[in-house]
Image (cartoon, rainbow over all chains, first blue to last red; front, side):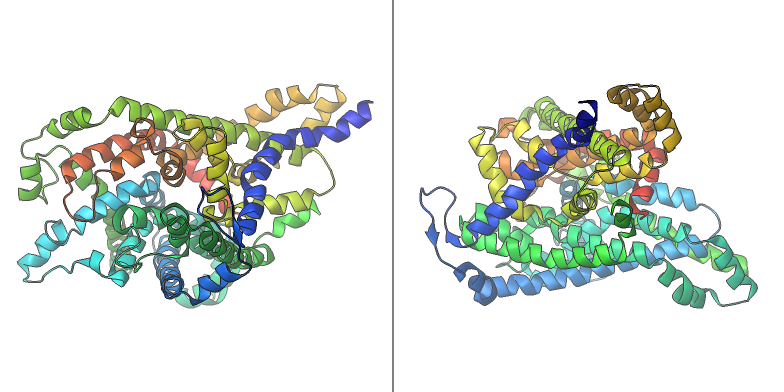
Length: 294
Length: 272
């Protein structure tokens, strides 16, 4: 009896998490997959089976094609701003200065504490083309500030800068921690040999930090595409004419503004498949720990 | 020569700090300026004629206390729920061998790769079925489904020596007492920091409130702030900045108190 009890115990501890995961994650994913084969509007009592038409629409509808292209632009901007820039700064803090590392860490992280709605508000003020401080300064030099919310690509740029403001400190700390876990004797040996710093970083440090580097890179894409949802919804609602929308935002628009659950679900499934490919890369290169549980 | 080079790097890092902090300083400062002053003396960080006018006006337009309470309640529910389920799950992983462990672990890892858009419609329908639309519990529930806490707790629990737990087991101390009297006290620093991170994240949560809360009486602070921003440029910025200032106070205080723990936890979460 006692023994049997013990075998059940771990599952009892896992139960609350399991229920949450099944109810709010696993079943919803399956249901969205199911919905992606139907036409529905969230309210009607019946759903019409349409086969693969919703998926066809994801790839052939001009609006969706534009949104997919925007998603790629977002990925490029996010990777540069939220991954490469913090990586560069973390290398500077680790290898090119010797004091104040702690101060930089504490201060860089502060914006990560704040809502993206606050970020969106402050940056619409700073970048307001008529009355904002940047427009004010530019006017003194005789330059007119462009009305960025009328241009898809400029709106995307601003939205990415807003998420950069929030995510920068977080990614910086993750990357700096990775650099800190590289054995010191390797760095010292290179110093003794007189190898130039940038060559040391390129040939030794970056490859050794590959695990956490890939982890932050993937996180930047997966979370970044979802983070931009907030500034998009607050500032542009996807406009001008879907110019700043991405696949995540378009999924939301289709479901809760246009009431087309079929297209929305198909878009969600396609997004998920892309994320699963990234997950596969993550497990392959980063999750060495999973083997402990085999 | 070398010294001058080092100084140049510090200048770059100082610029990064300015980029991070200056927007917040401008926000706080403008929230204490009149609308006229905020246009006229835009770049003054210290208001010439400091005023509480915006805060008073804000208090007339929205129910500040109600908004703050809603947000606080939601964040507290999410934090407590995620801490409890996370600790229990991590403890099961730490203390028992069972079938399917690696598969379950990989499911936890993969949860951060699930875009919210794929669970959005079904979760909305479930919350509507449960009659929890416009209800704080309805916004809290879907947020509980998150494995990041489990991963951090797992890492700290692995540092607890096996001998300690084995000794307790030999003494026939019941599991629930091992958990509450041995494991939880050892994990206190990481419970505090993970709890602080959970609370701040949920305090700022935007997606689920947008989907679930339509009635203004049930709004949280981020939704109320959104109402003060419009893309047409007709925004009363000092008022929006006053509301933002109210929103950032609590996360800032939490960070001020637990800063070291929080940064440590985030560092650990990245180490694989």
